[in-house]
Length: 148
Image (cartoon, rainbow, N blue to C red; front, side, top):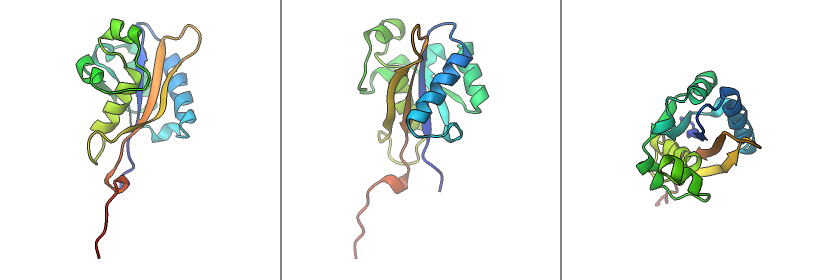
């Protein structure tokens, strides 16, 4: 059985350093009780997909960088929407919405079943990045009723 996907959604300002992204992703995974080796992908809004700090972080983590249009991310309900993110990217959430969207996209179970393990976190004072971690569901996580 394949493990359910673990996706780190990442929002970033232009010019963010890969080291800042890597530290934030690793810290957020630790807060989720998840080892970096369990990470399946990074995910972000499509307008940030070519940001060197994000592409380098994904490469150093050995995972793909998934990118989704702002309209797709804007349709995802999240616990911590941001007016600043909406103004900058066209979606009120990048990190949380991208994590959930990516985990759902990689899930072998029913779509729409991913859940956040850790909500949006920032990389600290003067933060240039945000991160959230979501866990997809696999069929064995879905409840079924056996009949006798």
